[in-house]
Amino acid sequence: MSRRQTALAAAVLAGALALSACGGAGGGAGAAETIKLGFLGDLTGESSGIVVPARNGARMAIDAFNATNPPKKIEMIEYDSQGSPDQAVPLVTKAVQQDKIVGLLGPQFSGESKAADPVLEQAKIPSVSSVATNPGLAQNGWKYFHRVVASDAEQGPSIARFLVAAKKPGKVFVVNDDQEYSVGIADAVNKELAAHGVATQRDQFAQAASDYSSTIAKIKAYAPDAIFFGGYYSQGGRLLKQVRDAGLTALFSTGDGSLDVGLINGAGQKAAEGAIVGCPCAVPGPKSAKGELKKFFDAYQARYKVDPSTYAPEGHDGATAFIKAVQAGNTTPESINTFLATLSFPGIAKPVQFQPNGNVVGDTIFIHQVRNGKVELLGTSKEAKLG
Image (tube, rainbow, N blue to C red; front, side, top):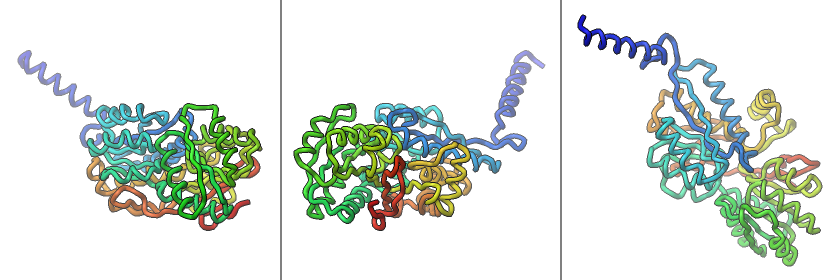
C-alpha cells in the first residue's frame, strides 16, 4: 500500500470511529438520535418568577418523553434573556444558526417576542410561547408563531368585566409601566371599562423607576374605587406598597404578569391582602387542583419541592405540543410547524389547539385573590366572587 493509500485508509478509519462515537447517521447500536429544542425567557431576572415555573413544566414533559427511549430524544437548551428584548435577539440568532434548534419554547415575554420572533420567522423555526399575551403578536401574519395562552385581548376585558360585576366602580385609575406587555393589557382594560360607562384616568411610569410618588399623587387626587396595574410583579409590588403607604384603600387589581408571590413580597403581606390578579391560567392550590392538574401538581411538588405556580402547566403543554410532533415522526422545523397546525390535545391546563394566527383556541380567564399571604384561585372571571 502506498503512503497516499495508507493516509487515505487512516482518514476513512478515523471518520468511521468518529461516526461510531456519536451514534452515526443511523443512531449506532441502539443509540437514540437527539434533536434540539430551545427554551428562551427570563430565568434569572427580576420577573423570572413567572418563567422558571414554565421552564420546569417543560423540563418535566421532555424528561418523561426521553425516559421512554424514543428513536429521537429531545435536548432542551436554555437561553436566559432576563426578559430583555435586546438580549433575546442575539440569543435566538445563536439558537438558530449555531445550535440548530428545530423549535423554540418562547420567547416568553411579549416584548422579547416582538423583537425576536422575526428572526424565527425568517429562519422558519416554529415557536410556542407559554407566557406572551400581547394581542399584536398574532397580527403580524407570522406562520411559525404559536402560544398556549389567551391574549390580552381576552384577558384585559375579562378582568375589567369582573371588576364591573364584583365592585361596580364609578371610577378606576389605570396605570402601567412602559413595557410592551404592560401597555397592552392596560389599554385593553381601560377600553373595556369605558365601554361599561366607568370613568378612568391613566398614568405611566418607566420600568426602571422605583419612586412612584407622582403617580400616587394622581391616584389620590382622582380618588378611584379601584386601581388596575398593567405590568409585572416586580413593579406591581413596589407600586402596591406605595399605594397603601399613602393611605389609599381602593381595590388593587392586576394581570398575569403580577401573578407571583413576588407581588406579596414586594408590597408586604398586609398591603397585598385582597389584591385581585387575573390570568389566562389557573394556578391551583393543593385543594383546588383536580384531575390531570392534580397529578401534575403532585409530580411538580415532588420534583421541585414547591407548589407549581404561574404558567407551570402551560410550560408543560407547550413542550407537549413539540413532543407530539416528534412522536408523529416530525423532526424538521417545517414538518413540525405543519403538524402544529393540525394539533389538538386536552392539555394539563386547558385544551390545546392553534388558530391560523397562532393563538390558542379558547379564551377562559381566571381570577385569583391574595388571602392571608397567599394567592388563591377564585374561579373563572365569569364565576369568581370577591372574598
